[in-house]
Length: 109
Image (cartoon, rainbow, N blue to C red):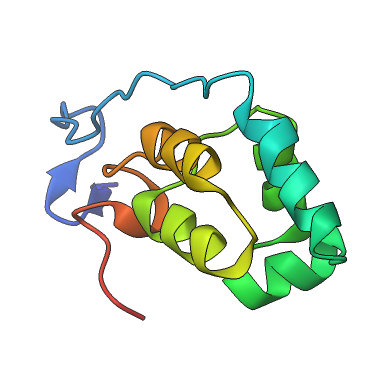
């Protein structure tokens, strides 16, 4: 039986187009700063996530310091939360332009 998948025979080598990114760790003050700003605004985690267009789990990961926001997400958070100049600087420094909503390969939805 001759099995083919999109023009490739079984066992034929396929060149990978995947790129490996190094996971970035945000500054330790990012998470507590975001959580503090959210609480000062009197907003719940789910409410902020909904307004910014994130899942509550992802926002929780940002607040726990496990993820760096994309530039687009950082901009939305900066508009919504009451951040001082230092908080905005911390958020901007943590933002990455090659992941998530800011990934160059992402198409607009």
